[in-house]
Each structure stands twice: as structure tokens, then as C-alpha cells.
Amino acid sequence: MSTDAITEADIRMVVERFYGEVRVDQLLNEAFTAITEWDDHLERMTEFWSSMMLSTGRYKGSPVAMHLIHLKHIQPEMFERWLALWEKVTSDALKPEVATEIQRRAARIAARLSAALFGAQRPDCKTLAPQISCRPYRSTPVFNEATIPGPLLKCHQLRPGTWVKLSVIEGSLIYHRDTQPAINAGAGATIIIPPDVAHHLQIVGPVKCQLHFYDHQPSPL
Image (cartoon, rainbow, N blue to C red; front, side, top):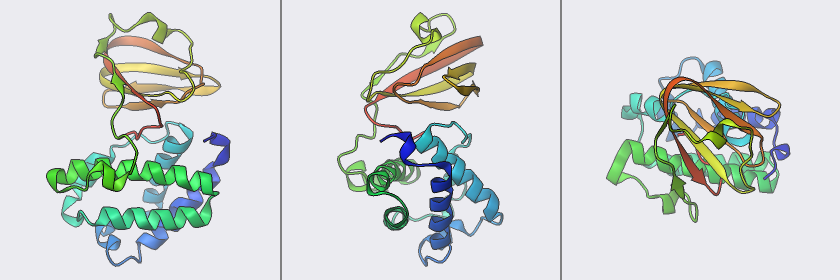
């Protein structure tokens, strides 16, 4: 799906409509009782979906950590309801091909969050995200500032259909991308690198990082 097919305005509209539905949903509303500043939450979710759909890198949080904090308010069956409501809102608001893609990504997110929160009690990936691989097809060794391959430090592009999730484990590095501001990524940061975008990494000190390869846009979780 081309990034031209969805805009920041589309994402904000979907987020606002979706959480408007969530707040009056009898099952899901319980999971959001701790939210008092809804404007801030909507802004964070807009940043999250902007990062997911447009690879803007605007979202800097940790969804798993935030859900663990509020685990007492979350039930396993909420994920199925969350996906059903997301499908309804996105199908109504977006073009069919865009709605399908954003629903696929939501399904992968739900599968991973459910696994992180409930372990063996979770619905598996096949239930929440049919025919979608939840794992990379290849992962590199952990590189440091001395072992990171030289080609990664020079401007290059991924092959069409190839996505990379770059995980910074320790230290920091800078991710440069064509026509976009550079991103200074510290320990714990995840960067989604799309295909056909010129980019390179810059090492600025001690660092440990790893690359994971996907045939679809991965979740930043």
C-alpha cells in the first residue's frame, strides 16, 4: 500500500472516531478508566498510527509497558472486541484497501499485546491475525559499533517488499532517511525502515543493535 493512500488527517479522524466509540462501549470502556487526559491520549495514538502507517517515527512510547501498568483493567476478550470495533470504524472511514491494511496491522498488534499480557491464555496469532506472520523471517546477530556492517553506514535502500525493524539494545545511533529529519535512537528504541527509502545509520558511540527482516510492515512493539 502506498503511503499516499492515507494522510495524517485520515489517521487523526480514525483515532478520534474509534476512541469515541470505545468510551461508550460497555466492555472496552473499563480498560480506559485510568485515562483522565483524553486529548493527550488521542495525540499519542495519532502518533502511534502515524508511525505505523507512514513510518514517521513520531511515536516514542512502549505499548507493552503501558498495558502492563493497567493490566488489572484488561481482560483477554477485550482484544476481540477491540478488533471488531476497529474494523467497523476503519471500514466506514477509509478506502477499502487502506482499511484492510490498517486492520491487518491492528490484528498483529493485538496478537502481540495479548501474548505479552496473558501468555498461554492469549488467543494465538492465527486467531487474531489470520495468514499474517507475527515474526521476522530473518534476524541479524547483535551488532556493536565495531561489528556493524559497513553497507549499513552508507546510503542504500531495501528491496521492494522488504521491511526492517531496527532495535537499539544499548547506547544510541542516528538513523538518516531521505528528505526526512534524522532520528536519534537511544536504548530501547525501535525504528521501522520501509522499502525503497534511501537511508543510512550513523554510529556516534558505543552501541548494540539488531535488525529484523519482514515481508510486511511490522509492528513497532
